[in-house]
Structure formats: C-alpha cells, structure tokens
Amino acid sequence: MKLIMDTFELIKTRRSIRKYTEEDVADEVIDKIIVAGMWAPSGLNNQPWKFAVIKDRELKAQISELTHYSRIIMDANTLVAVFLDIDESYNRTKDAQAVGACIQNMLLYIHSIGLGGVWLGEILKNRDKVLNLLAGSENLELMAVIALGHPSSGGGKASRKTIEETVFFRK
Image (cartoon, rainbow, N blue to C red):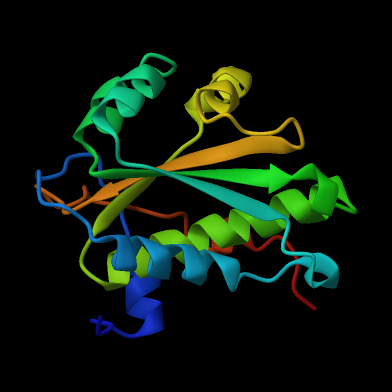
C-alpha cells in the first residue's frame, strides 16, 4: 500500500480510532503491520516481541470480557496482542521501551495506509487471562492489545503542550 503523507504529518495526524466498519483487513496487510513493528529498534537487536493475531469473533468476545473497552474489542476487525518475550529479554526497561517503539511503529503504519487503530493498555490487569485464552507460554508477558480496522469515523481533536512547557533544559 502507498503511504499517504510525509512522516511529520503522519505523526501529527495519527489518532486513536475506536470505531470501525465491518470491512475485513486482509492477512497480508496485518503481516505488513507486524513487520512495521518488527523494524523498531531494540537493545542488542534482541527483538523481544511476539504477536498474536485475533480475528475470531468468539475469541474476541472472550477477550472483551477482560476489559472495560469491550465494545472496541468487538468492533475491531483484528486484534494484535503484543507480548514481551522474557526469554529474549536482557534488560526489562530497555526491552519494554523497545516493545513500545514496536507498537508505535505499528500504529503509524496503520494510520499511513488509511486504517485506524488504538493501543489498549487497560486490559493488562488481566494479562494472565489473555495469555491463557491464547494458549501462550509463560515466557510471554502481554504489553498491549492493538485493535484495528477500517475506521467508521475520524479521530477526535488532539492537543499537545507547547515546547516551552515540555523542554525543561537547553544549553
């Protein structure tokens, strides 16, 4: 798919999309989204992430019971659960940051191809139950679930603090 904007505009216009149409997202597109995540930087290039792709409606219903955001889970065409692979981890802080970069890459790519996605973290309170539903091994720690699909509406307005409010030191 062709990118639709330059990088800075892409970053500034990405929004959390929580409502989707019923249109399918092809497996080839999902694979490219995951590959975008896999190209995030990681310490020692350890690539400490693993993914679970969920499209099955019954499984999504079970996952939706584990979060306050059940409607988003059920409306999304696809869920991508993103895990930290503890066996690949050498420094928890660095590896958690790498997984965060991975998730951001995925969200930016999702936006760049005209799809919508949202990073769901509230579900982490039930990370063990999610792992159990996905028959994942104990070396995997859920870090987020990305819900995605074709947006049924645009994202809301966004604002940010000014640069003066956020840069506390410059010399």
